[in-house]
Length: 313
Picture 1 (cartoon, helix red, strand yellow):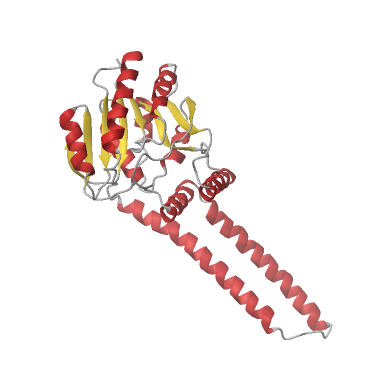
Picture 2 (cartoon, rainbow, N blue to C red):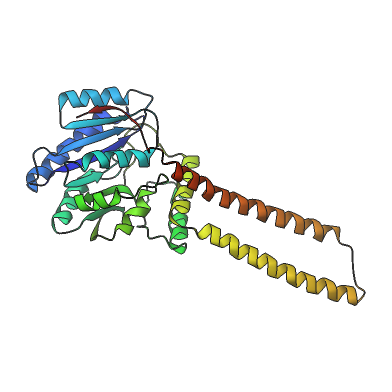
């Protein structure tokens, strides 16, 4: 019988865990009985270095139900690291793994559909939002822009899919062979190449607490996604540099022609605009290249993605 493990990353989620985990457990038990899964199917909560009482609540939930397990990071390593830690621990015994955020804005009732699709042969089942009505206009617009930009950059990404998904054991094992430190999971999963399926759902507002992805963190996450999946920004710099050289060659011809015609005008404004433009282009280029060099530096150090402080098995 196949064992299902539901992986729940949690960072300062004391406001929702006591409600969301019992609900998730009830849903999992229904899925276990309906789809004839292993009775030892469990929930694994990964505490991503919370500063509130999240870990104490996880300990309490574990005491009440030993099949609610926990991992605790020594500090905050980030949402992606928490997902990887959960998958690394779960893959030892689980045949199916579902990742879902602790606030349950992603519809946990769809886990049943995911398991059915997995039993029919899908190794990866994406949870995909069928609308973004619950988002603000700004968030909805920026999300659509982000997905469109990545598509144009050649990144294979599932639009309106975050980190609510099911992975089979072999898909999880294949994903965990990706050893880079700057990880953008939702961009790597489609590269695995296994049979996939989708379930659609409507995202609901948070039950309590605040979003763990404010605007600055969202922008940083988006930038990590772009730079970890494609070198298109560096190629763009090459194109811009080539165009600037062509433009300068044209300006040289124009300057010689104007000089020969005796129409030379000493233009301070045009000189200043040119200097500022080229200076800005160079600074942006250095910044983008520096970002890639910084990521390379992080990779070659081979530092661990996370450090586990405590474990509840």
